[in-house]
Amino acid sequence: IEQAALAAFLRFAAEHKEVYRIIDEAEFVDPASYREHYETIAARIADRLRAGAAGGEFRDGLGELEAWAVMGMNVFAGLRYVVWGKGEVSPDEVAIGVNRLLAEGILRR
Amino acid sequence: IEQAALAAFLRFAAEHKEVYRIIDEAEFVDPASYREHYETIAARIADRLRAGAAGGEFRDGLGELEAWAVMGMNVFAGLRYVVWGKGEVSPDEVAIGVNRLLAEGILRR
Image (cartoon, rainbow over all chains, first blue to last red; front, top):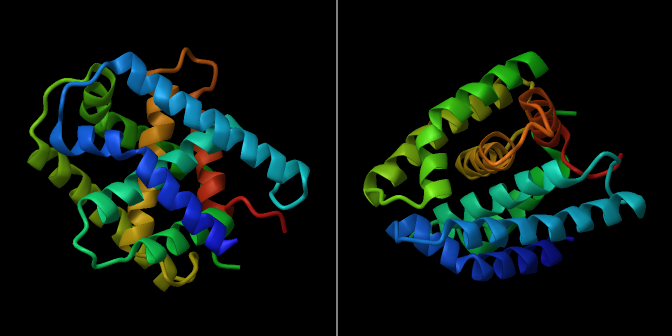
């Protein structure tokens, strides 16, 4: 799962170059297309979460809300370590850390 | 924990009104203060995560990376449901959903 997560993260970061550029350089952007961009990605993530729950890998109750949260995790980790980073944390490490957080959360068991 | 999480989420959403406004209206913003704003919040979240791990409530290995991911979860859930939302999901439900995702992740156990 971690290799798949890494690949997904890097693909996500590439897809979001425009978003990062906007955040980083504060350029003007058309708000409607910005929102549509996010909505499309969130819908795709929500589908994957629901499929994983249906398949038994993920817990029940995952949907749109969780999809937006997952997207936010990826965007902000990518912003900090890919866009603003100076290589102190590699993309592999970012992907593994974000993936672990997503998989198991923060509570001690 | 859920009441505390709700309160924290609402406080977070209030603190981020400026960020949301920027994202939503694509206004011009000074990139340096934008970044500093996030860095300050991330440092505070990282401190809380480390304190929770030290106190035994949270698992080990939590730090700056997880803090940025947590911040992203909150920003995007708030963007979708507080800023863009039409009340279809209440702030309570957003807080509970995001909190559960953060606490236990997505894997079925």
